[in-house]
Amino acid sequence: MSMTQSGATDSPFQTSRPLSAIVLAAGLGTRMKSAIPKVAHVLAGRPMIGWVIHALRPLGCDRIIVVVGYGKDMVISLTSEHLPYGAEVAFVEQGEPLGTGHAAKVAMEWLDENTEDSGGHVLVVNGDAPLITAETLAELVVYQEESGAGGTILTANLDDPSGYGRVVRGEDGRVLRIVEDRDCGPNEAAITEVNAGFYCFNRAELAEALQNLSKDNAQGEYYLPDVVEVLVSRGREIQAIDAPPEEVMGVNTRAELAETERILRERINRGHMSRGVTLVDPSTTFIGAEVSIGRDTRILPGTLIEGETSIGEGCEIGPYTRIVDSVMGSGCTVTYAVLREAQLGNGVTVGPFAYLRSGSRLADGVHIGTSVETKNATIGEHTKVPHLSYIGDAEVGSRVNIGAGSITCNFDGERKHRTIIEDDARIGSDTMLVAPVRIGKGAYTAAGSAITVDVPPGDLGVARQRQRNISGWVARRRAGTATDSNVGDDEYENSIAQELHEGTRPGQGGEHEEKRGDG
Ligand code: UD1
Ligand code: CA
Image (cartoon, rainbow, N blue to C red; front, side, top):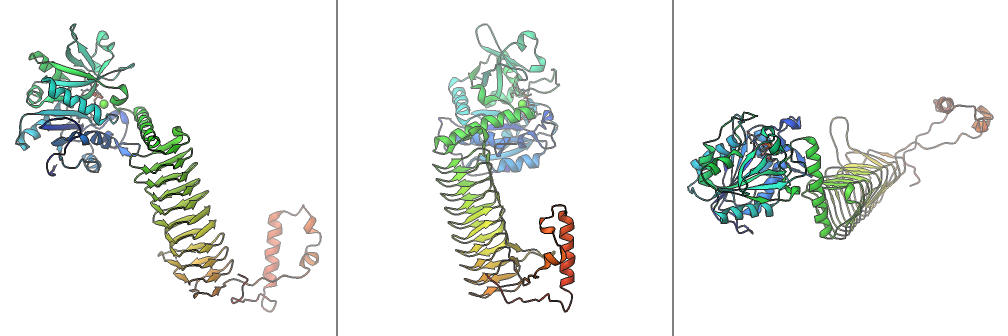
């Protein structure tokens, strides 16, 4: 399972070659209590493994080997979406997960069999630590390359080190070994310097040390951190560099997932603010990792912007708005709305309480108002859909006005049909446009019409029963009811219906006149 791309990328960091990276991502993540692999869980719009791969991207590794196992198809496809350009990427199956040391060994065997070079360094990273940054990884690699040590480990000092491997140092301060949480005695448990799960080793020394691990420990697994003790026992030095605690947190539980997401979200929000976006309340603003926003756009509280969304300059978004996989120009206003796979030009106003579903394409200056839903609909420049409408499977021209409550009846119970409304048309309030149907350029429809037949350009389409007023009816048939509050609404409605039914018996009126309307 190898995807080869052309030669290594140039790194903005001073890393040397050959450099390979191994990502450990075969575990299920039992403590997540999940059916999907741990590294596939999404944080701020990007899977955990995607964050780790992103941090590796600028390092200019010659190749990245991802060790997969549980849920491998999912892990492979999610990883592939975030690959760096120009590096070779291989997915290696661990088989039975016998521990992080075993996972690293499987990757090293692949490296041995599949690469011409043999020297250089290997960076090993846990796939479940999404907060790590490229700068810190580069520091680790450069330090190792310059030190000539057997390996360099990334460590952090944590207020609460529980769950992490502890770094045991000798009296002279040298790193001696790493002891896993579950193997700690009381003295070791008190150590607050932890193994962050990022290591850079001399490749040949790592390969050799991995042959010498034992599973004589609390979990009966081969521990990668035991490589430290193996190398030290051979008289080799292990260096350690200190990382900010905010970068090393590993995700093992849902609570840690939420905590990590919060940190990533703060980073994303700070990034947007530094580029000139106003977030009125960052603590209730959720912006996905892949979102771009132009400067002077204001994001009001309670707003989620997710997926591959791009927003132009000078927009006002929110409050309480969710935008997913949508593109918007500049100068738009979106209030209390939900947008999914929608495209908006410049100066579009949406909401309050609008739902723009997939395939909604709104040209410049379009106004979508209160409680309006659109789907798979192209709407031309400066067209207004101000109130209570459903516009689906439609092509609406420019400068059209759609009266309150008008809808496209796009579904006949079996198939969807299209509605076409040409430029400058005016759709009267509460028009039902029974598709397939076309309203010609500049045509009108009468309020309350069920339009089933095309309306030619410039015509008025009317399709409704003509009203008649029954003179003196109330005094004759319901004397006193107009002021009688004892009459219940239902009773009243029923009696009216009854009366009207009687009134429309043959020979008693009930005229039909389709060709008359008031516009
Ligand atoms: C590991 C370290 C610990 C360190 C911590 C930092 C070991 C034994 N311990 O502990 O010292 O403080 O990370 O977060 O390494 N994996 C495999 N195959 C396996 C087992 C695990 O690929 O057989 C992968 C997992 O998918 C995960 C990573 O390795 O991405 C770490 O495994 P995990 O079980 O989470 O290790 P920790 O107990 O957190
Ligand atoms: Ca972990």
